Length: 239
Image (cartoon, rainbow, N blue to C red):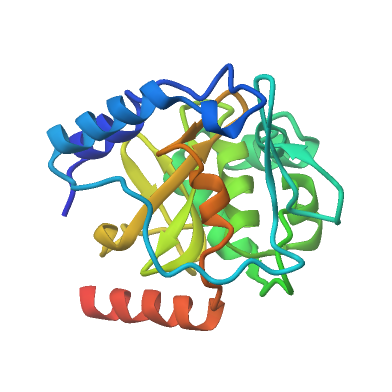
């Protein structure tokens, strides 16, 4: 199991992905070498892209780099949003829940786990925090974006997008800990070794683990039922 220090070494000493050029080829080449050396120093192995991607389809979200922005198409076709737009600590609904629960990361995570019903997406759709609160439903992307928005009122937090046992997934991370927003209540993740980060973002920063990681993320296989089954299996094994 990776320690808090391991996670901090990999995630929070990486230079933010700022000044990304128009060409994806120019995305932080120097950053890749730094990330690899930090990963090796932390003893967590390679950050090379994983294999086993699903074929790109018509509805596969796209990634576009422009100036200092990373744009994603994760809602309607042709509707592009900068990644940082999704995290909104000042959303009125987010503010209401934050002041109701208080500046407690685990209490806020527990609120999200219990209040937001898991919804299976038909395709890829990322909800803004206010939308998720209004609907009281969401998948891993939606609940992670909401949780990060809540925590960003008082502490560092990131939405991490990557894979869980080979399937596309999203979760939160703060202070070196994985916060799994799809559980029925807040508790420690029993199998952090099965979480593989491709990129992370909040309202201020976007970080890719290697150039082109976000594009590869959206090619990962999607099977929410199988993924949740694996999670339940891991939780039972930890009891």
